[in-house]
Length: 176
Image (tube, rainbow, N blue to C red):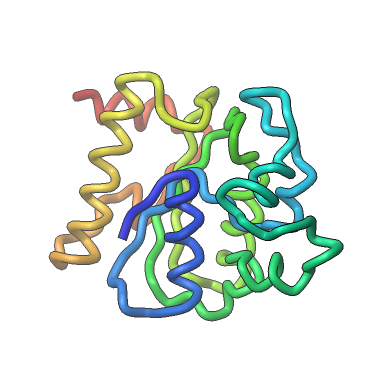
């Protein structure tokens, strides 16, 4: 399963509810409805409240009127149930779904020793605008799914991670 933005939210939520998927990739997922509600939607300068009350969220009010629904629909509060390996993309300059949403979910999953890998492209917004980053992420997603779905060997970046200090050298090795 794979999704980005609201689809990333749906992917992140689904893997907390079922183990029917062998692997998942979530891009820019919204993971905590309560903390996201009051954040700024930087790409427009507005708030997130309308997203939850009148748009995709459909909550009919803020968290104060319906705390249980906001909590129930927030993947971060259900991480203990995750069994599905997750590849998560969340960029540091995301102006739609704040980077803290990805960090909350990633940190909770790591704390519980769940199978998760975070990929972040410095300076990128909600999607990937730089061609080299789009290519790199496409290859990483293919390698991730090939490993988990086809049993191919895990690439080094997936198995051992990439140290931030060695990131530039690592990316030069992956030039397409």
